[in-house]
Structures are given as structure tokens and as C-alpha cells.
Image (cartoon, rainbow, N blue to C red; front, side):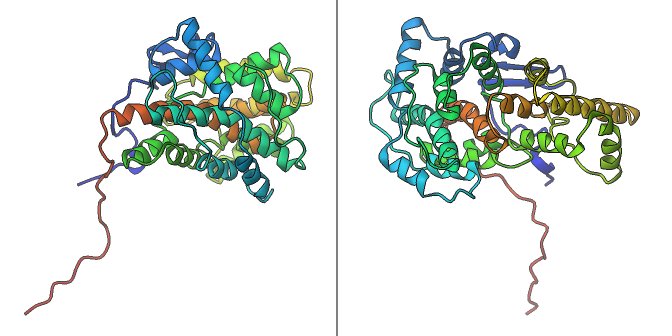
Amino acid sequence: MSYVPGLEGVVVGETSISHVEGDIGRLSYRGRVIEDVVDMPYLEAMYLVLFGETPGEDELQLFQEYLFRFGRLSEAETRLIASMPTSVHPMQALQSVISVVSLSDVRFRGRDMDASHGLQILAKYPSVIAALHAFRGGGANIERFSESPDYLERFLIMFTDQKPTPDQLETYRIVQLLQLDHSFNAGTFASRVISSTLASVPAVLAGAAGALSGVLHGGADQAALHTAREVGAPELAQAYVDDLLASKGRLMGMGHREYRTVDPRAAILKPLARDLCAGTALENDFLILEALETAFNQRMSERGKEVWANVEFYKGVVYEALGIPSDFFTANFAMSRSVGWLAHFMESRANNKIIRPAALYVGPTVETKVA
């Protein structure tokens, strides 16, 4: 028996939700390439990923109303958030709240109760994250709820306490669409493992959020921005990369296990980040990131390798330009990726088998007693 560290290249299941074709740099949701998906309204893309079909006008309206109806926090949820130490990272807090949210027995259009409960959790994500942010900022307006019917606008209003401009809302829509699903990444695979035990939907989504919180997964955007600020200026990027490679360090946000060419999500996000940061206080951060990418590409090319920036590399400056501080980057990622987690929960439950891989034992052998 042998094994592959990290299960790299090992097929562990089937999915029809998203397809990552890393050799040609293509990502698709339900057969639609990401370049087309980013032109879709956010709720329409959510519906596609969740249910495998594009909703009609009536279905889309009912979907929007369902998410709005269950988006407000209960008093118990608000008290829970207010009871948490402000030193707790937002992802730890989010994981805790998601696992115990209040759920209703009202189903969504004949869907089963698990799927309906999952949708109710997705509905609460904007309010939970905004409340966590408000509480960490001093507790003001922790219970506020925006009456905007638009899912993403509702979040930005609650989080930043102001109505986003059309350009800001459009940018946020694209960033969140890029993150809805990405095949069997660590968080999604964790969700399927938990789901296979017949655990509850809150347990599945909370467990996936725990996996996403790691710096090698959802935390890379925060780490990349921190690196840019550590470097300080674009002209210092080459020396930083050389020192990093000499010490066998890692440049977070560069490279991706699945893609052997440019990450198609990064190809969409980078020009968005450039335009958004131009002429602002974040322009220097963007230019440093770009210089780091160029320097790293050059050194990798000299070694006969191609390593490109992934979607996390430039995402941090985009989030900050939208008024989202770095410690809430991953929580915003989770709000989007929870759509994929729920889709995988429903897909895996349709033909469930508990996930129980074998292990290669390398410990001491059992000593046999001689009679």
C-alpha cells in the first residue's frame, strides 16, 4: 500500500458542481466558464451552483425573498456575538456562530429541510459578519439590519455603515462570484467528510469554515497583503524575493496546486484591483504586489518553472478598497464559498457513503511472544 501526501492528484469522488482544468487554466460552474459567470447577477449564479439550473424570474424573486426573510439575527445570536472576546479572530467567531444559528422549519420551494436550513444559514452570513465587525469596533449598531433586498448590497451597508456606489457593488459582486466553488479544495473536502457522517448542516458549514481559516487556504489574501506592506516599496521586491527563495520561504498567494498556467480568477481580478487602487492610498500596495509577482515569475522561469499569482494574491487590496479590513478577508471568502459547501452537501447526500480512507501504518511493529 502507498499514499500520496496531501492526496495530490488522487480522485476521491465525483462532482458536477465545478470543474477545475488546471492544465489549460479553465474554471467552470455547472458547465459555464468563469468568464461568463462573472457577468451573471449574484443570486442567479448562487442558484446555478446550488441547484444546477438557471432560475426563472419568479424563482429568482422567491429565492431573493427567502434569503431576505431569514437574514436577520435573532436576539440569541446577537447575544452570542456580543459575548465573544474581541481578541478572537473573526473566522473562529464565525465558525462558532454558524454552528448554533436559529433555524426555521419553513422550506424553500419544496426543497428538503436540510437544504432549506442551509439556505437560511447562507441568508444569515451577511448579518453575522457585519455584527462581528460592529462588535469588534465597539459594539455600536450590532443589531442593525439593512432593508436592501440585494444580498450583497445588504451586507456592504451593514458592514461599512454606508450605501456602496454602483462601482463598489459591481466589484464586490465579481470578487464573490469568483469564489463560489472550486472543486475539492480543502474546505470543500472537509465539508464532504463531515457531511458523510450524516452530521447537521450547521456542523458541515462550520467545519468547512474551520478548514478555510488556515493561512494555506483562505488566509492567503491577508498574508499576501501583509507581505506587500512588509516589503514597503516596489523597487525592494526583487531583493525580498531573492532573500525569500534563499531561505526556502513561501510567497503566499503565488502558485496553485491545480493550475499549471494562469489562474483564470486571478486574470479577472488583477485588472480590477489595478483600476480600483489607482490614485488611492492602496496604489502602492498594488504596485508592490505586482513587482513581487514579476520578480517571482522571473526567478521561477530561471529554474524552468512557471508560477503565477492565484486569486488570493490581489484580492486583499480589492477588499480593503471596499472598506473591508484584513482580519475580515477570510470571512468574506467564507460567505461566498458557503454556497459551494452547501451545494456539495446536497450533492454528496444524494448518494451518501461515510468517508473512511485507509492509512499506511509506519509505527513500531507488534512484538510476538515466543512460547
